[in-house]
Length: 208
Image (cartoon, rainbow, N blue to C red; front, side):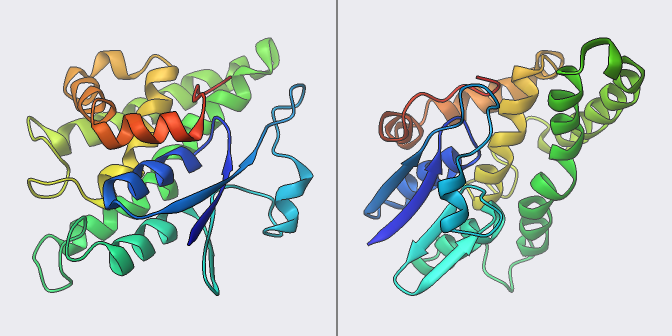
């Protein structure tokens, strides 16, 4: 059975959601952030040297990094769903967005979170971080337009990956300026599989 090493209030929540969408059985191994530092516990370093979550185990397969996990799950259990075929004209867009989520879009959002904790000491970086955040979220807003999903007309792994970007942007207050993205996130969070993943994964609040 698939095992997911799941840290509370983290990116690993979207992997639980994807597993619910796939309809496959899985086991959750829970880890809790330190109440003072908000860091992951050292126990995760016994799973992966970086001590990060999520980490997926499926038999002898062990994979870290959300994008790699999403790709593996779609390829292994998707049965043609959740990813365009390699020869499909949408495949390159799918791959680009799947990796853009963490490769580019999350950087200013994470900087905003960390620098915000510095108070006045981090203030000089605020304008640059804000402009980069708006740049990326604005780019995604234009890509989505009035569409329901980012790649084609069905949910794909790209939507799974991007969901955390928009949840982080919503937490930071940026998403309120992009109503099409807020409506998109609302639709994702209303999906039965998303709600089931929250039930199984536990309380999920960014910045908690």
